[in-house]
Length: 258
Image (cartoon, rainbow, N blue to C red; front, side, top):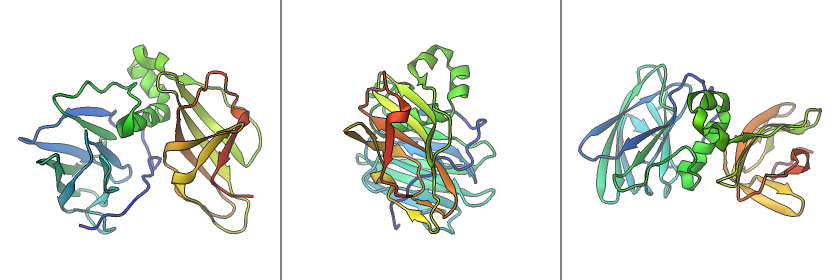
C-alpha cells in the first residue's frame, strides 16, 4: 500500500451533531467498528506509532471506497468515505500485534476515536501531550459551545479570549487559552489580495509575539489561498503563556500574501 503525507483538513463540513471524541479500549480479540462519513474525516489515534497497515477497500488512492490519510511513523490516521454506503476494513500492526478495524458509512460519523491500552492512564479532555492532546484541544475549541453544554464541569479548563474587531488581511476570529497545557488555539482568517494563488507549507506556519516565535503544534491550514479569496483555518500553539496576551500583538508568519 502506498502511503503519502496528507495534511488533514479538519474544517471540512464539520457538524455539531457529530459524535464527540470517544475513547476505546484497544483489544486484538475483537473487531472495532467505526462509523465514517462522506463529508467529515474520522481521525483515529493509537497509543504508539503504527508499524504497518493492511486494508481492504481502504487506500490512499483517490478512487478508493474509503480514503486513507496517514503519515508513516505517526500514531494516528484518518479515513473518509468516498461514496455513500462505502465499507472497508483495516488491520493495524502495533507493537507486534494486529488490531482489526471495520468501517461503515453513517450519516453521523465518529469525529475522533482514541484507542488506549489497559495499562494506560485514563485520557481526559484536558490531556495536552502528543497527538491525542493536540487533537483534543482543537476539537474542544472548534466546538466550544457544545463542549461547555455537555461537560459543564470542565468548561473552566478552557478560556475564550475576546478578539479585536476590524478590517485587515490577517485577523484572529476566535481564540481559546488552555492554561494547564500552556496552549493557545487560534482561528485565523488570511486574505490574499494578490492576482495569483499563494502557496505555503502548513507545517512552517508560526505565531510571533514580540521577539519570540512559536511553531504550530497542529493546524488544518490547506497550504494555498487562491487569488482574491480568504482562507479560515485553526492552529494550536504550545508553550506560550497567554495570561496577559493581547491578540493584536500576534503576528502570523510563513504565509506571504503581501
